Length: 503
Image (cartoon, rainbow, N blue to C red; front, side, top):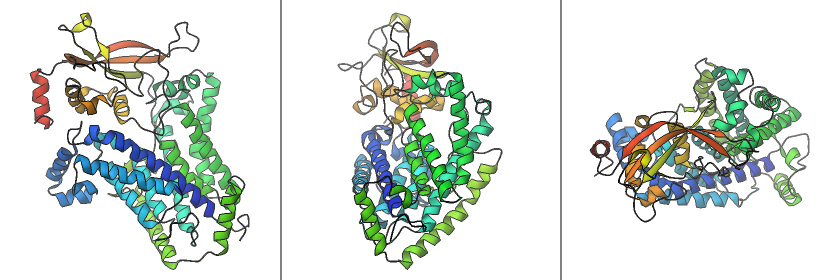
């Protein structure tokens, strides 16, 4: 069977989708390996054990909690359990990357990552987490039950390919509608005047994008509309229109990847867009050896009735579960990044419905002096991604995610009382807790913990590239975000005890 025939085939499409999915899963589990203990471990900033008790109390029983938030951690939630799940998920993801996948393997990985997301609390409350759950669920039905070869005997079911296109359609259109409804700067094409400077984690090229001519930045907004509001509709047309629509969507994702550090969101969004392309497209891009293997598999393909029936059952389920997300997308009160079922099977998406025009940043600072205030020598805790030092170029982090940095970006637009775990973080820094300290780039007090810690809110702006001091940032102090605290402060101790963080 020729892959360039008039009848579309998707052997190479499946191969590419699963390999990229494996890479994203591996990155996501690697993030968990490195950060899950400081964040939700037994002595973490938001301990998982306390969270499980709160859910049980609120819903009335452990069983009700499991039904509402399915997770393997209902049965075992020690630090060992957290790392076991993270490492197992990472290793199984590597199996997919090297070319082997089937239903049980993908189902196990899906369950493991969903277990982390459902118990991740603030740290996993991002749209790309439920998007990975939905994408991973669909991928299960691309594969045979047991055969694991990169090119098995069974062709990818067309209904599942269409479900991937449906996911791409909802992601892109939802993102476009939330922007159009949410912020006048998107509608008047000035959003990119502010977006690059104020986005969560800037990257090495972000400042360059920020200082592009305003005409170019307006063109960028128009390209955004093309990718999010126009291209999704052409996913459903003939082969050429699908290829063009998919190319526009993927090109748009690469522009976003170059301009900042949005975790693995954009790489993940590329996956369903890959379903716009059939093998006639991939055979011109991929190495000949892969194309020949796909052709050989297609020539001896066997139809699996159970696989086809299962694909249609999954399609019917997705259609039913899509009703609420579609109604939300059409609503003038459209919500971003919401799940409507306990397994995150079909969700609603969207990002940057509004764009801030100032970049606020909370910096934790410590001192070993006996005095406080401006007379003390305050040393900052340097984030791994968020700006602190004015002469430091933003690093490239994505597709990896620094979850503390992301949460502190949100926290800078709120108060400490709305992010109560920041008090727990201060307590741990006052004791040089190794898990908490390693969430930062370095410990300014390696020998002895600081006597006092405070948090200060600053307004950061990009310095012009041609400034004589070679600065990347300028900043202005705005206000105190957290008062000066010590490990003997009764206010801090009483609050930690009331939250169950101090035993």
